[in-house]
Length: 248
Image 1 (cartoon, helix red, strand yellow):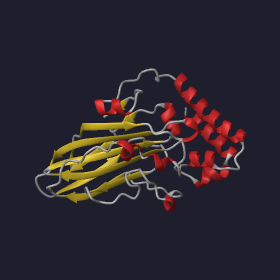
Image 2 (image 1 turned 90 degrees about the vertical axis):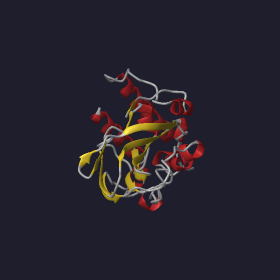
Image 3 (image 1 turned 120 degrees about the horizontal axis):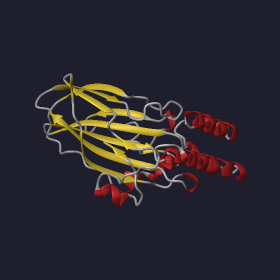
Image 4 (image 1 turned 90 degrees about the horizontal axis):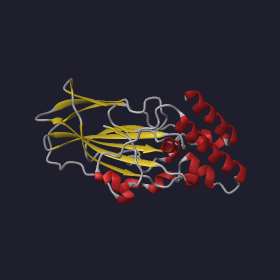
């Protein structure tokens, strides 16, 4: 499968080499974000996954199980409290994926050292960001608005640590509607920019779409792609009619 992916990327780069090199957050990316915060005396994580067109077409499983956290050196168990799922329209009629999960961790009764190690989607290209605190600014607005000046060198933060203390903050809430789907963030993606260029020929557009369909078909015919389950909560089912596999 990796060889097929490399072949697909190579073919796309031959079609539009300028776009492929200028937009690293293109249609093959799986981007992720984690916000670690304390509400009251409980540790929480807001985890966001933003999949571009090709991973969505491949039905790459949604998962949070690769997020490892320790509190004062002890492994912390994370429990999925709520999830939300949306599939905003991307380029050439293909959909993208926006997934959000609120994870509850252990109690934090006093100042504690928290270490985060995000191993989800290891090997996948894309934006990787971790922040601490409910009010700490995110460079990507939690994967909703990627800064143009960082597209050539997207954040690659998968390990971070900080000291946290109990607070009077309320537990984090899920986003909904446009705040969840963040449709504008797709416009600056490599694949969307490719289709949006006025001088682009119909042949290149059709070729890129055919490449996406080919990769989706190749994945569908590969072993182990037949099992699917519904998203884990009613809010996720209401967000999208289809089904996705989630590994919490």
